[in-house]
Length: 310
Ligand code: FAD
Image (cartoon, rainbow, N blue to C red):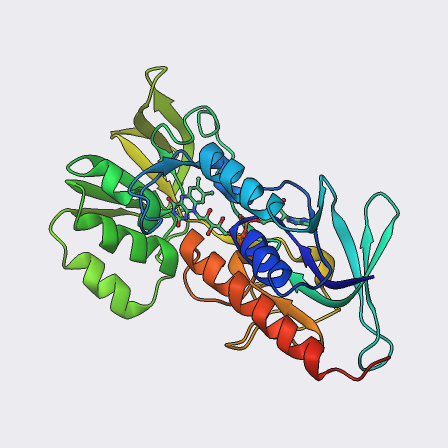
């Protein structure tokens, strides 16, 4: 059995594995895709002390760093069920899709999240070529350009306000008849001279020239008329979905499905910790996920040295 079993091999999981292994305890990582969301990223310019890198490079570096330690890496393995320990200090089980069961004294959940997509033609083709999901990450790439933000909830409104300070013009496109964002955000949004808001609009296509985004087509849901906007960027803000469906009913999740953790990364189950985008941690970023993964590993170690010897 492992002392620490990490489920998920993104920045949070990699950091957790390294911190755990450095304590000299038996550490394993099971990940569906080692590297996580980082692999889908092109430019990374906010990983502090590295002024610019890209996703594949950082993904490879994460794996390389973990491999320098005695960590059992189980890549391409999807966890499907967590069975809590039967008694304090007992073993927690993780059941994998391939039928195997892994046992560990502590578990760190770091299964990350995925952005909900519009599912329209052009979105996949122009991802990272104008279609973006993270304003904190990619906002500066659109300095002085025109962008749309899809989604008028709090994330969409925050993104539009944030981007309005960087880009030349923002069009906020909402499917519903009105924005769902908090009133204070809507007031702020309406006060900005370079933001337009379009409601009752269904985005139907991302336009491009083969290299990059050139526009967005939407349908006015009131009169059915199609319109197109000329622009260089589209930020999709219709939800970040935590990869926690498999944990429902096992431990406490927030209404959005995020694993509820305290400031030490402790979940509602003894011996089970969590870190990164899958959790209630505010702001989903690489440096934040790595810090949280390190916190969770140190908390798991602390838990181990205080556990009854079974
Ligand atoms: P993830 O990176 O999502 O990793 C989750 C891991 O868990 C993966 O290994 C996955 O395969 C695995 N997993 C999921 N479910 C299971 C399961 N059931 N069983 C086993 N394994 C499972 N952040 C920045 O700081 N700067 C940027 O420039 C930046 N740009 C981004 C660009 C894009 C296009 C995207 C999508 C995100 C970007 N981010 C950026 C956000 C950043 O990638 C995330 O905040 C970060 O990767 C979160 O790390 P994580 O380890 O919590 O989760």
